[in-house]
Amino acid sequence: MKEEDEILDKYREAGKILSSVVNDAVKLIKPGEKLLSVATFVEEEIERKGANPAFPCNLSLNDEAAHRTPSLEEETVFNDEVVKLDAGAHIDGYIADMAVTIDLSGKAEDLKKSAENALNEAIKIVRAGITTKEISRVIDETISSYGYKPVSDLTGHGLEQYNAHADPSIPNKRIKDGVILKSGQVIAIEPFATDGIGKTKKSSSIEIYQLIRPKPVRLESMRQIMNEIEKKYKTLPFARRWLSSSSDPLINRLVNEGILHPFNLLKEKSGGLVAQAEHTMIVLEDGCEVTTRIL
Image (cartoon, rainbow, N blue to C red):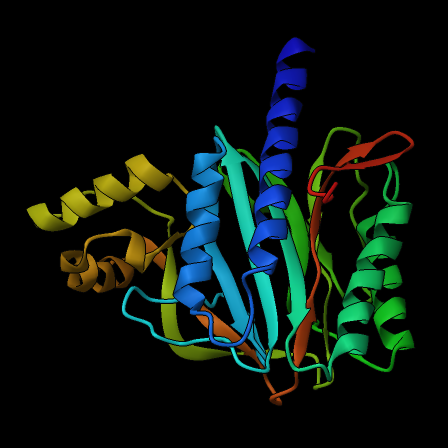
C-alpha cells in the first residue's frame, strides 16, 4: 500500500504543478504573442517547478484539433483565434494531462462551454464500477445539447507510468460497449467539440514524435540519437525542437525504420472550429479526485 500511495502522490504533485503552469500560461495567450514563447514557457516552468513535460506543449488554432506544437524557427503569433492549450507533466513517469480552450475570437464561447461542461458532467459520474460507455454518453449528450458535435475519433484515455495514452479509451461519442473503471486507475477525460462534422484528418505537418520500437541500427549517428531519445524521454512523446537541428535528417530515417512514430497535426475534416477541455483524475470507490484542478 505504501508504494501505491507514493505513486498516487506523484500523480497528484504532477497535477498540481501542471495546473499552476497552465493557469499562468493562459494569461500569456493574447494577440501578438508568439506560439513558441508560450510553449517554451509551459515546458520550462514545468521543469522549474520540479516535474518534466510529459509531451510537448500543444497549441492548436481554430480547426486544428491536436498535435500542433511550434517548431524552433516558427514565428507564428496568436490572432483572433480559438486556441487549445494541451500540456502534460510527469514525475518519474507518473503523468498529469490537462487542456483548456481560450477564445480570442469572441465568437466561440458556446463551443468552449460545451466542451467544458461535457468534462464537468463526466467528472460528476466517475467512480469505481462505472463504465466508459456511460462517460461517453454523458459527453456526447452534453455537447449535442449545445448544438455541436463531439469529435468522434479523439478520445480520453488511461494514464500509466511513461504511457500518456494507456487503456482504457474514453470516446467522446456514444459507444455500444465500455470498460468498467477500477479504484486507483488514473484517467484523463478529454471532450472535443466542433461546429464541423466531428471527424479529423491528418495534415502533413509533423513536429511531435514518440519512440515505439528501439532496435539495432547500423549508422552510428542514428544509434546515438535513438539512445538520446530513449534516455531523455523513454516512451513519452517529444518535439523535434527538443533535439539538435543536426538530428532532423535522422528523425525521418528513424520514422522510416519504424523506430519512431510521427504525430501528424490533426485538423477537423470539414474545417470546423474545435474546442477542448481536459482533466486528469484518480478513480475512487465513491467518486474521483481531479489532480489538475486549478485551485
